[in-house]
Length: 409
Image (cartoon, rainbow, N blue to C red):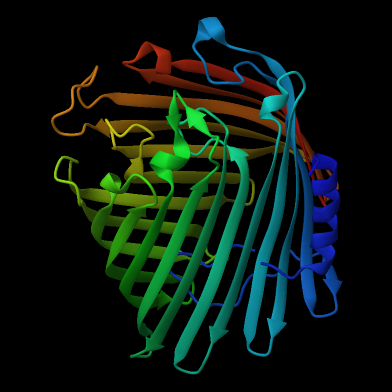
């Protein structure tokens, strides 16, 4: 199917398909969704259509190669999307439909149409709250900081949660999730078939205890088990025991977002794969000062699977920060900086070029934007991403210079 056909189908879907905004978070909070962004009503359905053109400009390193081999090209990404809400009795259906149409002028192999769907159903009852959600990704893009190839794959995630009120502001619950990752059979990176190495299903179940500290803030603890089962590379199979504490701040609170800290006991079933027992984190918080300055910080610490069975996984530790400032009237500026550390773990008894190597990815950039009314923003951005590695062929330096145009109906 051509990119033009995909765009037409997406436009039809935005009007006629009821799918869902943000999939239910890891800890469903069972509060009514924020529909203040809705701009269109069709019967009982509320919609917020958005069209964005991103990275309209030059990519100086299309394939993330070493500086000597870097390829330059003109590129842009067209991203139409629609957020949807619909009330059904006391329950809410919410969803999001997004298509990222990626265009490269010279290197046609890097063009792609990436489809993202999410759908969730929130069911608040008298003492029991239920939720179910699903998300689906189909497309070609880079699956993280390690693999530089734009790999074609499908990801399907399903979640369910239930909790019962045991005290006036305290809830006891359980939740389960299953994620399936399916790479195309032709996808390779550095001579490794990604489908054979990384096709997997992750199944998770947890018990939760949540306390509503204030109407806008809750804290919860959970403990559970997960199983990672690989379709072909069964020597990668593993079990994990996890425990964590999470704080959730309502979108209308002064501080917005989530902060989650925990521990993971990761145990591969194969005796020659290294174990991991240590801390994990997932943070995404933002704060607006005096209505003109917005701070945002994102952090992550957890294991990720490597394409190379000799180095079966890495511990990713990263922080990204962003500062957006309204300068004067319709003019704003934004600056961002981030760092990601990939600490690899070697398979026991296997000789490697480097022992437990570390790769570091630095990113920084910024831009300036101009608002035309309440619906249109035009911006110019410059972003640089650079990976340092003890393996020379894994190093790269990439600069993207381009415009962004965001229009909300």
